[in-house]
Each structure stands twice: as structure tokens, then as C-alpha cells.
Length: 316
Image: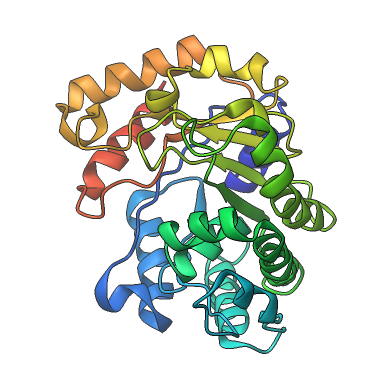
């Protein structure tokens, strides 16, 4: 079974020869932009032999605003970037070069943040939360503008760059940030707008429920978002793959490993990593499973450790 078939079968919850596996991390310094970033992705793929590439959006975390933001009302001045803005065009080009670089050998998924993350990256968490209290409608308007650009980017990544789908990162659902009602009225509309547009071009989009803050999220707000597979921070949420599968409607699941330095992948001996990998698959079940981690690994992790997981799965 080739890598593309293996990944798509896993996402469709069809039988596979063995579960696909992939891990990723951020590319730093010179590897974070331009051709060097393309080369870094392709080199890592060839070194690790993972089953698919999750293309990182390194260098494009800070969403470019078209207006200076000082007061809450300034968000009403925001305008869409449009398809020719470097933020859009350069990311599409990165995805195209990487996807063409693997020449159909594997699937590619591009990391795309939901609008609420973009608006915070563009200013700060403190500014956005303060302005939400002062003028929620201004923030809602800004989120709708950003959502239009992120949706356009998603469509171009799939339709022009040839990505299999997007890896859609949700943040801002921490239990101490919003009530359920607040999240559903303030953030969910822009979340869903981008995801629905992406789903219009690909049925193979992945949903990442980020536990970046180390605080449990209100997962109920995300559990019904339409995506082919779900990935959540099992070590933050206290929700394992076997429990999470029915919770998220029996969709395909992605994960199993702790992405932090405390996890076995970063610190365990080879025998421990191999044992953990086998036990993970035995407990979660081989079908509808993609082996990965809660989130991005540390950039300095030895590529050899990732190979341990790949080789363990393929030798089972």
C-alpha cells in the first residue's frame, strides 16, 4: 500500500496495512522562509520517511493588518488582503513547491490558523480580549474580514497548490477565557466560515484543537466541527484516543504521543519508544488511526527518534 492510499484509507476508516504516522516541528532561522523552508520540509520528509507532510506556516504567524489598531473601533477599518498579497501568494507558493517536490508520493496538509488566532498574532492576546469587552461588534467585523482571507488561502492551498487538505488549528477555547455561549457567538462563526470553505474543495481536512496554553479547552464547542480527522492535546485534556474517538463522533483520530520534552518520544530509550508505539496502536485500534503527537515537536528533537516510531509501526 503506498503512502497516499494508506493515509486516505486511514482518514476514511478503511483497512490499512499499518497505521500511517507523521510528526512535525517548526523550522527556525533561515529554514523558516523561502526556498530554504521548502528544502527543509522535503529533507525532513526524506530523512524520517513519515507517511505525509504537514506543511508549516512558519514566517507567516503574524497576520498583516491593513489598518493601524489603537482603539477598539479601529478594527472596523480592516479590509481584506486579497489574493495577490504576499501573505497569501507566498504561502501558496511554498505549498505548491513542497507538494510538487514529493511528486505524488505522499499527501500534504497545510497548517492554517483560525481567525481568532490570527487576530491575536497580529496584535496581542491582551489587546484583543480588551477590545472584545469594549466593542465586541468591531472584533466580530475584524474576524469576518480575516476569515475571508484565511478561507481564500485555504481554497488556493487546495485548489492551486495541490494540498490534500488543511490542518486547521483552533485556539482560544481555554476554559478560563470564554463561556460556551461567548465562544459560540464571538469566535465560532469565523472558525466555521473558514472550515466550511475548505471543506467545499477537499473532504480531507484535519482539525487540530490546540492545547498550547496547557489549559483544558471547552472541547464541546469543537466536537461537531466537520473534518475528516481530529487531533487534540490528549495529555492536556485528559482524554485518550480510545475515549476521544466516540466523543468526537467516531471520526478518524490523529495523535497518541506527548509533544513535550516530558514525553517518551523526546526522552525515552528506544525500547521505551517502541513499546509505547505498539501499546498505543493496540489500545486505539489500527483502523481510523494516524499516529502523531498532541502538537508540534521541539525543533531540536533527533530525527532518529522519529524513525524509531516509523520503523516500529512498519515492522509490526
